[in-house]
Each structure stands twice: as structure tokens, then as C-alpha cells.
Image (cartoon, rainbow, N blue to C red; front, side):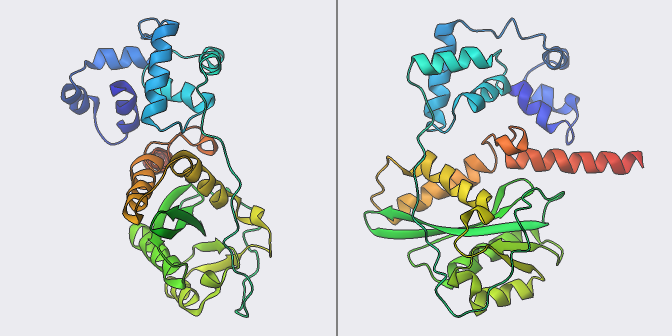
Length: 296
């Protein structure tokens, strides 16, 4: 795990700085990079199964076999796809099942709506070009909570979010405000959402104008026009909500914070990003941009 972490930080720190702090040798790190630890880190089936179970519990059953393979390798262990699939299948270890969700969009209003400028182009070339937003519902014993998020499509990072007991316009304006203060993008971001009354409201549209953003909205009744955000909610509910009881809204808020800020943005391996976390993917992109500038 130490070697994998050093590998992600090479663009920011020298080996001579990191290795002594982590109490490992530079030669050891270089051997790991060449694959020299493959035999040393190969586990028996019993050892591998114990490690898979530990990761499965640690990540609250978030990973199926494809992500589990990459997580094991990132931690410095030799792991084949066939072997991990077999061990997980034989021992009933699987990712939490997906469920269908209710629609939260209230598009029965007379407010103006924007055209679908995004047109399902879900792969922008750089950060802060396209942000997408949506709202979902979360049940607690104290009543409903509603979660609004703002997703940067480039690295699928949740850059802004808000949880409130009512699904009013301020929930989406607060999420957008958080995103803007975190990223402070140039006034050229396309913001895409559904046609819900919260996003069509004067308060939210005024906020988009203030930040110099272009508004795009999905076609009526077409959830696929905002598929990445829908997918995020699916992952969150599947990995942290379904199967658990939340006695208070405070418990749900703590769960949302842990998932977004601690796990998803920083650690969760994302298949669209080549099985890197949103933070790692963005850091790698920034490092590559700096390298290109130095060469030029």
C-alpha cells in the first residue's frame, strides 16, 4: 500500500522525501515498480480470501470482482481476475445489489426550461467544462431528507452537495454555491440538470447567471440525458443506504459526508476513469498538463 501511495505522489514529492517518512527504501520502491514484489506478495487462497473479506467489510460491500482485483493490486498484492472472481463466487462475496428508484423530478410547472445542450456528451476534455446536477430522496426514522449533488463530468467528482428536509430551490442553489467556491471556475461552465422546478426556479437561474454558467436541461421524462448523475445516486444508495436503518437525519448526514468526502471522491475506483478515484484522476491530469508545459 505504501508503494502504491508513493506512486500517486511522484509528481508532487521526491522519492528522497517520501521513502524515509514511510520507512521504506528507494531501491525497494523501484523494485516494486518493476514488478519485483509479485512473487513475494502472492498469497495462498486462504490468505487471499481473508484479505478480500477484510476489504469487502472495510468498503461496506461496495466492490464487485473487477474493482476488487484493482484494489488488491493497488495494495501491492498479485491478484488475477479469474482467481478473485472464483474466491468471491465460491464464498458468496458480492457487491450490494442495485435497486430501482423513484423519480423526484417535478416538471409540472410553468417556468422556462433550457434546451438539452449537453446532448449526452458525457466526456469533456478538461475539468470545469460540464457540471451535472440532480436530487434524490433518503428516508430516516425522523422523516425524509433530500440530497442534491453537483458532479464534474471530467473526473466524476462530487464538487458540491446539500442535504435538506425539504426539496425546495435552496437545496440546489446551496449545492451549486459549494461547487463554485471549491472550484472557482472561469465563467464558461455548462450546467446540466433535469427540468425540475428547483432548477428552473428564478433563484437557481439567477445563481447560474451570477457565475456565468450556461444552462442545459434534459428532455422531458428522459433520465438517460443525465445518466452519470443518476448512476452516482445508484452507487451511493446501493453502497451506503439500502439495507441500513437510519434513526436520525444526523446519521444520514454523517453517512453522506463519509461517502462523498472520504470514500467516493478520494478512494473509490471508478471504471470510467480507468479504475482511479476522481481525485487521483484529476491529479494525474494536472501533473500531465504541467509536464507538457515544461516540455514546451
